[in-house]
Length: 374
Length: 184
Image 1 (cartoon, rainbow over the protein chains, first blue to last red):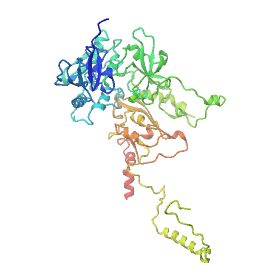
Image 2 (cartoon, chains in turn orange, blue):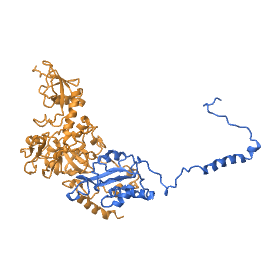
Image 3 (cartoon, rainbow over the protein chains, first blue to last red):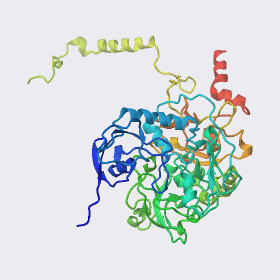
Image 4 (cartoon, chains in turn blue, purple):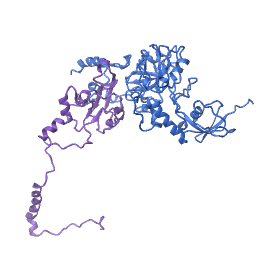
């Protein structure tokens, strides 16, 4: 019989699990799942060397191992600490951890503008979830927040440096997924910022993945900018034949318009596979994609409002009225689309490359005007 | 038969005597009550001329607010629409152009904003959800109308007058001028 792999026994919040040696505490906790899992802002499974920066995944190690059961004196970053046999970890069951996490959230929010009403990431933002789950009710910081000179990163990616929490994920993406990194962290301390140093557009084929990877709204999709709120769009699984990437994506629809394309995210908010810029930014037509069905969205997420499982949302419902009434159409007292100025057929938001402006709406109004005379 | 409650009173079924038979006494008793009401305080008010004051928590017609400089406060964050149980609110956002900074407070604004007053139940959840102090339920009714399509309120119907460019309308809407007239 082949030599059996020795598995390490870890206890996290009273739940014991056997994991392979070399697993981090965070990954062991993710194997258990649920409440036990510490939140992570900078760690990303698919990026080597990520983690250890944001300190939100701090846990208390109550017993180091069976051989040396002394507790670790300080809280440890669970994404960077590997498990030992007989380790006892306390996450939510430890007062110290919860207190430390509240402190970390306060630090992360010190320079964060909290402009969620404007931010396109709102609704799927890790920092938003984190501060709701672990943050304090109010801020004690009443000084000027830091600001930056705005850098243009090209036609696809919008950078909001004030929202950045310095997780370095986008730097790792550029290093590990694209062949050449042109952006990075400049300056240090409070002045540290993500930039390209010389104004240079990020134009690598896979650079769009920095948007998916960004835990906050610092890097967002310019083609989706201000088009709609995330929770009013319908995420569906879609795929297409792409010569560069896997072509498997989540398409975010409003009606029949694809407003945004992102990578498929798992329950930890991490993409299953990287997608190329062409799939992400250029293919905004339903005809480009084969739609498989609704994407699974966490029930507690705001995105799941008005979101159903099964085939709902991907197939048009049958109108039974005309069948029953020998082809007669139902008589409606008012068709809202005749009156409402929202969703005018003359304005195809998905076709506008950047954010819509008042000029786009004026044009749509003029187109709609002659139709309204009746 | 046993009474169901303690308060049941047996009906008086004795035949009426002659003074009861002519009814005059009972008519007089009834008229006395009617007459007494002439001197009592009236509970009704004459509506179009006289108006009852609204309570400060009254939830009436929506307004879209502006800030002191007359810029629209709404950023089309969609929280009112997601909070709306009747799904009456729809909107479309746009980015502010460099020359529109005096019109809109934030970088993003609502290019289109509609409330379907036929759907609205005046619950006030939009007001509660708004993070930008942009939508309020005012102390007025939504006016009645004959056509359905006039109940789709667009941004022009909802926005308050600009305190910079239309100060008079703004003061009337705020009730400052009306109040002065009454006090005179």
